[in-house]
Amino acid sequence: MSQYPQTAAQAGRGATGQWRRRVSIGEVLAAARRQAGLTITQVSQRTRIRETIIRGIEEDDFAACGGDFYARGHIRAIARATGVDGEPLVRQYDSSHRTP
Image: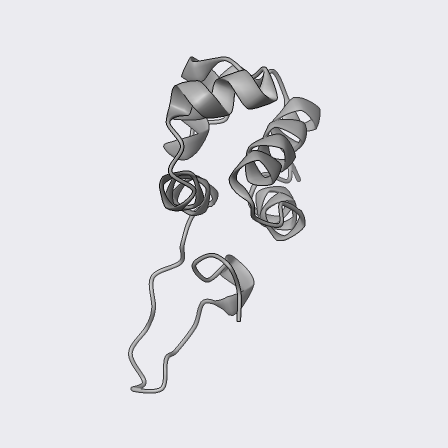
C-alpha cells in the first residue's frame, strides 16, 4: 500500500461505486510533512526552498517555482524531505500541467 493518499492514477470509483475525489500534489506533500512531524520552516531548511514556495506548492500553486523544471525539482525535494516517493507526484504534475 502507498505511503500517501491516492494519486490521480488511482482515483476513480471505490468499492461502494461512489466517485473518490482526486488527491492533489499539494495535499499529498502537506499530509506527508505533517505525518513526518515537520514544519514548513524545517522543510525549507532541509531543502533550501523558500517557505513561500513550499506554502504555494502545498496549495497547488506552482507559479512561484519559476517554471516546470523547477516545480519538478521542488516536488522531488519536498517529497524526499518528508519521506515519500516523489516520482508519482512528478508524473501527476506533468499530466496536469502539460501545454498543448
